[in-house]
Each structure stands twice: as structure tokens, then as C-alpha cells.
Image 1 (spheres, rainbow, N blue to C red):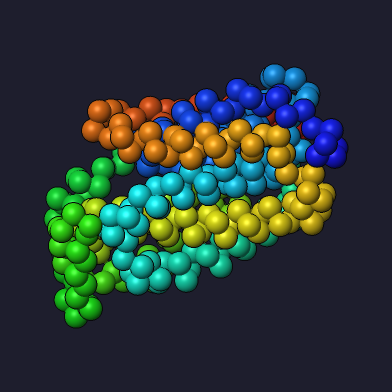
Image 2: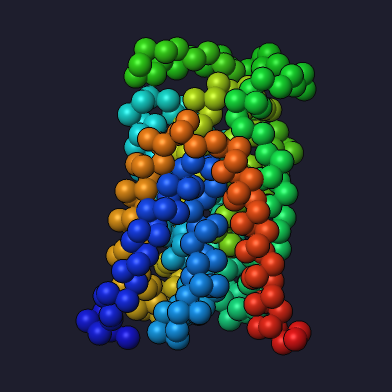
Amino acid sequence: MELGNLDWTIYWFMFPISMGVATTAMLSGIGGAALFAPIFLIIFPFLGPEYVLAGTAAAIGTALMTEVFGFSSGFVGYYRKKLIHFRSAVPFLMVAVPVAVVGALMLATLKEQDGILKLAYALLMLALAPIIFRHHPPQELAKEEDHRFDGSGREPVSITAADGQTYNFKKPKQGADGAATTGVGAFLTGLLGVGIGEVIMPQLVKRNHVPVPVAAATSVFIVIVTIAAASFTQVSALIAEGGANAIPWNLVCYTIPGVIIGGQIGPRLQGKVSQRAMERTIAILFGIIGLAMGYIALRTLGVF
């Protein structure tokens, strides 16, 4: 369908929903794409055939594209606070970016395997649900005793934030196991739109003892660069296959402004909503999404 023939009002309801998704993502620390993709793949078909996107690959690509703008809002805030340590992010990005691109290219090759993609997404949601449910907030991670790494022999780092607070720590190191963890998260992000955010923060805080404010800011930078690389690859592949019309512009014209606004609302609500309660709610929601997506995937594959 040509851009001029698109119904630009059909997805109007996604503007407030996108604000809610982005606000929830900022409060819980999960990527917005993890909630957008199920909306596109599970809810839209119930609304009618005119709402259904081109396929699972298109839904994941659109969700990740939207998430880029939501995380960009958080990145700008942390940049203004001068909390991002860019050099600490480099080792993680050297692993995450190329692996995320590989995952995105894999998505392009599997775009015709709709049932397999949905099943993979279902399994990922079911795997993440207990992990998020048992997740310890960064403040708790920082208090835990972890003698496996004391930072000795590493380059000392000192950051002075915009508010005058100075943070001293040792430059983080991934190690082989850390690189493997980062790679898995990045690959899943490129393939299914979620994963990298769940593996970076624990490495910075618990393993490397980076102060929580700096770790949070640096983690956001790593995530935004990773999802931007994955999103660019996915969108480019979709356009190469189906032209500019492969992107549902009449949908993203509502989701992108929504997540930009929600990205500002979420931080303002920090402290007013229990993060632990929010994480447990998200974990339960992921479990429900996983079961629903699994059922849809098995039907698509003709199992029943």
C-alpha cells in the first residue's frame, strides 16, 4: 500500500498505550520492545485483519525501532547529568553491536518462518519471567558482598557528575564469561528485540562494582547503541525486501511520540511506585505473554 493510501487514524489508540509502555519500561528497567511486540502480535489480530502487521519480523522490527526513541530520551537525561562513562562502555559495545547485527540479519532470513519466530519469542518470555521475578534491584546488588573481583590492577576512574558528586571506581572488565553473557543478550535483542538490557546492569554493578548511578547511565548508553544497530539492520532488511511500505508508518507515527513522552514521565515517577512490585508484575505479564505466544506459535506450526 502506498503511503498516500494508508489510513493514518487507524492506530490512534497506540499513542496513549505507547506512553504507558514507555513509562512502565522506565520504571521497571525492561525494554519497551518486550511489550510492544506482544501487542502487535497478540492484540492486533483480535482487533481485525486491517490491524495485522506484515508478520512477526515486521512486528519485532517496528517494536525495536520504537524502543530506540524511548531509550534515547533516557540517554539524553543521563548525558546531561554527566554520569555516562563512555570508555567503560566500549568493551561491552565491541561484543554487543556486531552480535546484535548478526541476530538482526538472522531475523531477516527467518522472516518467512513465522511460527518458529513466535515460538522462539514465547520461550524467551517464559525464560525471562522467573529471572525478572527473582531480580535484585541495583541498590541491593551494590550492597552484596562479591569477593570474586576487587578491581585491583585495573585503571582507576573518577567521574564528577553535573551535581558535583564524584564517583571513583575501577574500569570494568568483561572477561570471557561476561562477553558470552553480553553476546547472548545482544543476539536475542537483534533476533527478538529483547535481551541486552537484562545482562549489562548486573555485570557493571555486581561483577565490577561500578557505582549504581554511573552503571545505570552507562548501561542505558550501551543498550541504546545496541538496539539502534539492531533496529537499523532490521529496518534496512525490511525496506530492502518490501520497500518503504514494509514499515507501518501509520503505526510508528503514534508509537514514537508516545514513547518519547513516556520516557520523560517514567523518571518523574521513580520512588513513587515500588520497583520490586513493578518487576514482579512484569514477570507475571511475561509469563502470560509466553503462554499466549506459545499457543499462537503452535497453532501457526499446525501442531493443533
